[in-house]
Amino acid sequence: MPPPRLAVRTGGPEARGGWRPPRLGVQAELVLGLALVMGLATLVLTAVLVVHGEARLRDLLGRALLVEAQAPGPLRGTVPGTFWWTLAPDGAVRTSPGEGTALDPASRRLAEEARAADAALLLPGAVWESIRFAVPLEVSGEVTVARLPR
Image: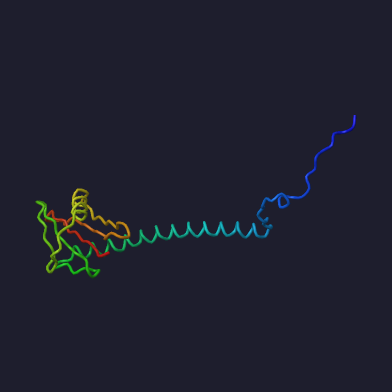
């Protein structure tokens, strides 16, 4: 019995009307792989720097606002446009001289949290929100609250 005959196609996919993308060479694959690794490393480094920078900003800004809140006399604002309020234990609100802005609900909540924790609190908020700071005063039971401009 004779061996079976195999059908052989002639021509590649191009001959049959198909399309094949061009193959990358070894050098192009290496460059693409390195670009991917460098891009991911850049993203990780950026995330680390943002988190570290926020921690340093929180520390420095908190210290500056604490010193200002505990200073005698009217509060002047380390940052221009900062609003200061004093929240009494009975809920009455006093504004700094020359400031007629009402205490907003987010700042009031932060002041109540600071009073409950008996500690200074700094709330950086999202990029589009204001930075808020609250610190209980030692003697009177009042809480001083600040809202920095956006």
